[in-house]
Length: 222
Image 1: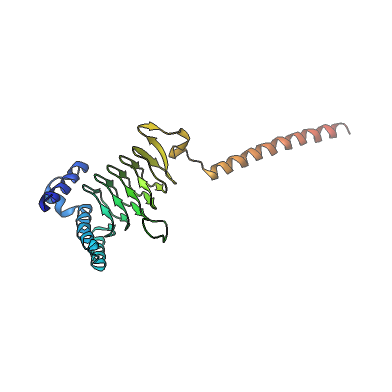
Image 2 (image 1 turned 180 degrees about the horizontal axis):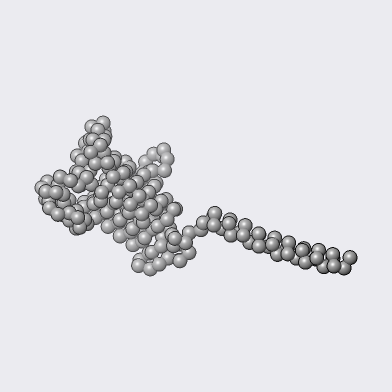
C-alpha cells in the first residue's frame, strides 16, 4: 500500500470509530492517537535496523507530544485506533493485530524482569477499554473486549468479554458465563466480615436475653 493511501486509511478509521471527527484536516492535525501510530512506524523501522537509540529517541519525542508511549519494538497491525490516548503504554514485545481499538489509560505491560516475550498479544478486532491493564505474555482473543478498569492476567478466548479485578470472563460467544462471575457480584471480603460479625452479635444478644430470663426466674424463687 502506498504511503498516502496508508495515511488516508489511518484517518478513515478515525471517522469510523469517532463520531466527533469532522474533517480530514482536523483529524490530521489534532488526533494524538493517530500521531502516535505514525511516530511508531518510523521508530519501528529504525528498531528493525537495530538503530535502537534512534528508535527509542523517536518514541520518546512521540510520548512528549502525544502522551502515548509505544515502545519501538512493538508490532502493530493496520487500522489501530487509539481514542484520546493519554496515558496509554504499549510494551516492547507487544503484538497488536488489525482493527484493534484502545482507549485512554490502557497499559499493555509486563509483570517483571523476565526476558523474551513478556507483553501481551492482542488479536484482530479486539477492544480494550479505558484504564484497563493487560499484563504479561498473554493473549487477548479475536473480537474480544476488556472492560474499563479491568486487570487481565490470563489469556482471553476469542469472542469474549472480560471485566473486573482480576479479570473474569462474563460473556463468551454471545452467552453469559456463570452469573457468579459478574464483576458487580464479585466477593467483598469486608462486607462478608461485617455480616459474620453481625451474626455473632445477634447470637450473643439471644444468649444474653436467655441469661436474663434465667436470672429473673431465680430471683423470683429465692
